[in-house]
Picture 1 (tube, rainbow, N blue to C red):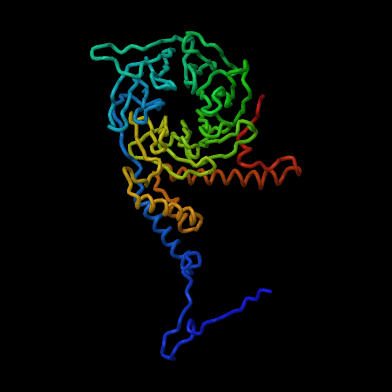
Picture 2: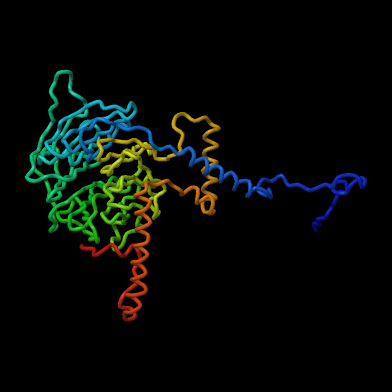
Length: 446
């Protein structure tokens, strides 16, 4: 039989004389430190304040266009290359590292409606109001050689959207129909139509590469499979969607930018209601683009601002604006997840940091450790009222601030009218209580 006996050494806790100081037992385990939480809370508060002090997201303005920037395209293999198309038919190729234009092409007559770089990065396509699709070499011609497209396709109607397949020589355009083209042919190999007058945008799925989606003028979002002869299904909303973007990491999810000031994230397997409604803009949302990690997306709006949303959150985590920036028409997120590019009506392309307070350049080991530690502290205390207030506070232009308050009042008035008037004075069960996600979908057609 094993017996454990308690034994105490009086020398550990008894004073030799009454004039000695009291011995206080101390446990050096950091998890048992009585001041750990208050100390970390103070550090989290300081880190949050410091983040707002160091938040300087604007990096550069790329000047050179003579008309409003209407579309942009990221290079598929080069991080420092950006392409932009303007309303005067001009296409420019930019070096983002040096902040200068390296090439200018008078590509179309009228607006440049869409641009996309081929998956291998050797050439790019552009479409315009002159009903043409043009393929251009990514390398500039030699000195004295005239700029000519590699291939030109003349269509029957104006094209409004363009996107390229991720793995082979196939691209899609939209206008009065959604057309699938082979690079070796001058006529579409397949055309999709579902009783719609016109389409405004078409996008290939970057994961399930045979799937694509388009936004139509009848307020619907239509899904297609290139292997099928007919469209798969469509969801009709209360207002028209301008464009959409697929999540590059989760094949079933896409986010659409709508005219009702909101963005909607859908699961294509269940279109009866959106997964999330993103609700911070105060005017029509014109463009949206996902980050390469798939965790966030950036949106451009007619209210002269761009916002960054976490994909599962209703509210934006960041809003960018300047005094000179007008209606933002197009926006892109760089492939290295560090920068955001926006093109607006006043002929400028602006370069922003995706994380406003991030320090650019080479970081020492201690700086990396400190940044990671502060980030974990902010995550740990993010729901404390004072930390949350400091982290969420943004200075907004006066027109956005006043319109946001007005929309809040209007939204509350509509809710109060629906609950206190319509439902209260109707037969029980005749008027259902709809959630915010269910209000905006009219029907799903298969």
